[in-house]
Amino acid sequence: MEKILVNGGRPLYGCVEVSGSKNAALPIIYACVLVKDKCIIENVPNVSDIRHSFDILRGIGAKIRTLTRTSVEIDCTGVKCGTSDYNLVRKMRGSYYLLGAEFGRFGRARVAYPGGCDFGVRPIDQHIKGFEALGGRVVTDGGYIEINSDSGRAKGANIYFDVSTVGGTLNIMIAAATGDGMTVIENAAREPHIVDCANFLNTCGANISGAGSDVIKIKGVEKLHGCTYAVIPDMIEAGSYMVAAAATGGSVRINNVIPKHLEAISAKLEEAGVTVEEFDDAVHVSREGELKHTNVKTLPYPGFPTDMHPQMCALLCLAEGVSFINESIFDNRFRYIEELRRMGAKIKVDGRIVSVEGGHPLSAAPLMAVDLRGGVAVLIAALTVEGQSEISEINLIERGYDDVVGKLRGLGADIKKVYLPDPVVQKKAN
Image (tube, rainbow, N blue to C red; front, side, top):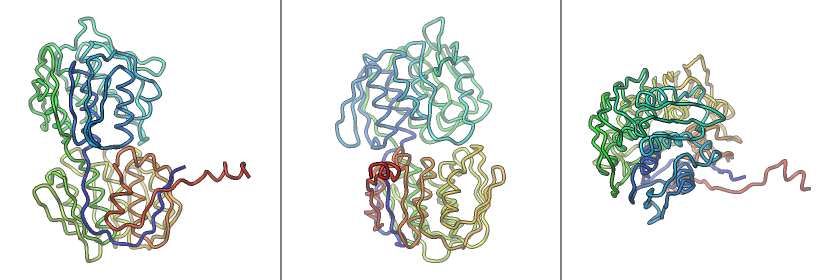
């Protein structure tokens, strides 16, 4: 078992480079299935969700060649519909983009039901609603989702999402890019990675307008061509290092970011007594005084991102007074709280409201990553306390953070990844 050992209590200082956005790279990688040509994707993060996606695409016939640590060539000329590996698809949520990609290219699709972090109910009913509007007959059977159409091609349609759905917006946008006619998505999600995927598809010859607004128009084209495209920086990785710098009372410049994407995070940090300076492609975060309590409500972009909720909770454990977090996106994103309680945090949950009574001293403890962002939350908390904390299940953190141990060490953290034998296995061996 690999674990992260943290000897905390040290402020973080220096500069850190943010990797490409996992949430942008995933739909772009699957959208390559639409292209009977080679695409070169740059600024790709080296995280396990991306590596799993490459394995899924190789399994259906894609040729993927690593060019540098952060760039790959993807050739989907010979991919075959409905042949993806069931177990690989189940490892991650983002594999559902293969549904839109296969439907867009072949007019049909067959993909296993996706996996990913457990935040309670995370239905894909809006995806299915969109696929059906595009002329697909959707059946879920035996752990698979199947889409078939009479015309052999997605057909343009007007689609209104009942709720703002990032995955649904991306999936329908991908499927409709090579569809027949005009598709209009209303109440579309507005996240930066939706804009990035639309820009990638347009670079390949698609005709998509309005991405970043709540109405997206997609005029289907006959075919797409290859291109070279660079993924945007990861706003959640950047936000996590911003919070880590603030929590440890350090001073860190975070490079390779788009400051506008971070505005909601920056605003809340400033409310909590943190200094945030913006530059063209960087932010500088520092803290000298005490942290102040504040209230946070997660909202679709451009609101405060749900993927920053756990990290912000870890920070607010250190602030004087009571803070409240209203989780309006997911119904059960609170499993990480038990890990913070192991450290002495005073946190209560009432429905979707978290109350954090800050100012109580935290202590080092054996900890576990319960999901991707919750894992980083306990890692941030461990950085703030004297003594050694041991974090297990770090594979969940590595789903979305490229070289987190190396980057934190570069900022002065006493942190390392180690292999420790499972105590049960060790006992049996003795």
